[in-house]
Amino acid sequence: MSAQHAGAFRGSIDDPAISYSSGPLDNVVLDVNRRLRDGSLKFAFDARNGFLDSALEALQLPIDSQLLVFSRGSLQGKLIDDQNPRAIYFNDRVALGWVRDGDVLEVAAHDATAGIVFYTLQNKTAGTPEFTRVFHCLGCHVAGDTLGVPGLLMFSTSRRTGTQFDGVPRHVDQSDPIAQRFGGWFVTGSTGSMKHMGNDVSALDGLPSRELTSVDRLFEPSGYRTVTSDVVAHLVLTHQAGMTNLLTRAGWEARMTASADETAVAPLMDGIAREVVDYMLFVDEAPLTDRVRGNSGFADRFSKRGPHDAKGRSLYELDLTHRMFKYRCSYMIYSPAFDALPPRMKSAIYHRMWDVLSTMSAAERQPIVEILRDTKPDLPASFK
Image (cartoon, rainbow, N blue to C red; front, side):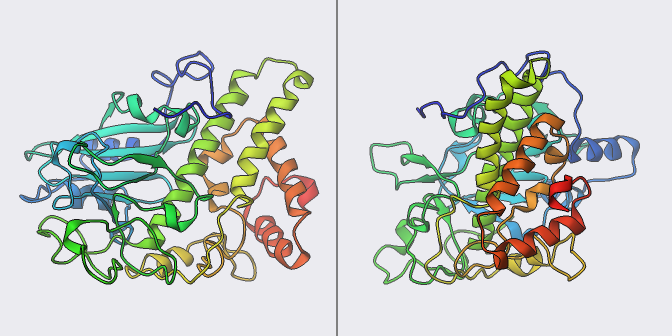
């Protein structure tokens, strides 16, 4: 059991200001459902992986984002082990989980105001598919580790012993060193001299290294979309999970206090803004002590994403030598959840951002500010 996070949301998810269960939604899954209903989108059923290929294409989930987890802490955990790992695919709006021979595809969509909204898609027989919203996922996905809001979880799990159903999970984020990450996951690519907890499976016992370029021959491959579980994709999803939960909590707290006196709630807003911004600007990031190299193409594709400023720079550009990103500001500042933050919360976040940016060297601060000026239309005057 995880202790309640000091900065967790403590209100009800169904308070009228939040209305998580019944309020209007705005996420990519709803658009896919609309297209399935009106016939403009068709899903094809595959005998080995069901609707997986069609769902990935419809949700625009790149195959190079595939991550493979063999710890069993999930909805279809009884089917999961190192011979049948769960595959996760993601972009910055949605994540999809597929378990071979499982009953459903599992989807977590980042909604503009509701936080993470969960869906399943029946994946056993051909028919007319539709994503169905579910709430049973909240039993695990509203916790101290998600800051008390419906969110994403990233665990590093110790190796299972003979008396355990699974290993002991530990929540991780970007502040954790590589040595404490990836337990219970396959990891392909290289972290150089940095050791990690991934690839701890019996098939690799006794070998001089657990570093993998591929999961080929570790388990029967049918149904999986690729043979990689890219280390760079791991790093990016870990950052994104923490940022998603922080943005959701910030929006919810601001909505809960919308009618309160501004002077009275200013300390709360400032405290939340500090948490959001310090994570967004990687104040707490554990440094890399060696070069990280992926091998799926994820890093190259991700680094080319935009928006770009007038000099062609982007917050998506990766560093992977000393830290994760070239410019120390999260691309999640472009997310619908950030844009939907109430003005009171957004103002506090921008104020804190300027304070932190002002502590950086001019060489580090200037490109970040210039990129934001060119790509973020709602910047306050202080940034301009």
